[in-house]
Image (cartoon, rainbow, N blue to C red; front, side, top):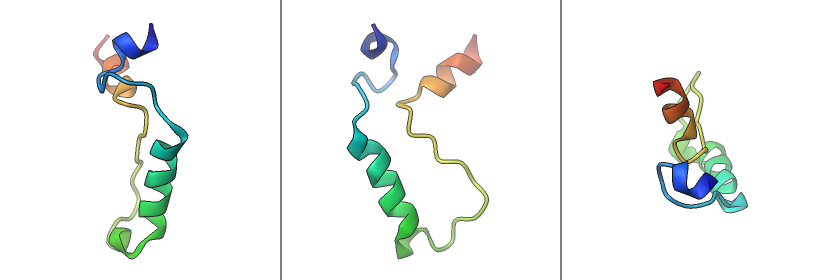
Length: 50
């Protein structure tokens, strides 16, 4: 059921969270401050629409 309502159309994997964490720990994120990175496949966006 969750896969059907998730906008990206698949189940999240531990690597999805890990990739976000690795990005934040890398120099590629050096200019990012004070933000939230949501790794939820878009579920937060659809819950705001209701």
